[in-house]
Length: 86
Image 1 (cartoon, one colour):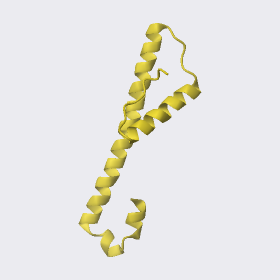
Image 2 (cartoon, helix red, strand yellow):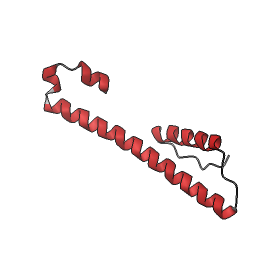
Image 3 (cartoon, rainbow, N blue to C red):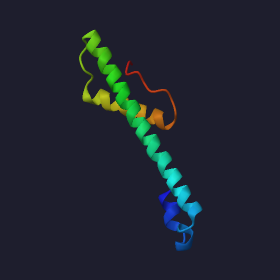
């Protein structure tokens, strides 16, 4: 998107249609990022609650990072987030 915008001529960058397109695409990107972050946090909280109820140990930072990376990949491809149970 940035490349597209920077390649527009000054006149084209003032065109309301191009401005609207820039705003719409940027908002969609931000919405996707936010929803992915919220989903990861909800999953982490749900997993923590399950572990606390079972009295299990907390996952290692490496396991948590791996789960978050997988969930982020799934969010970007609209796949179901992982449960953290492997």
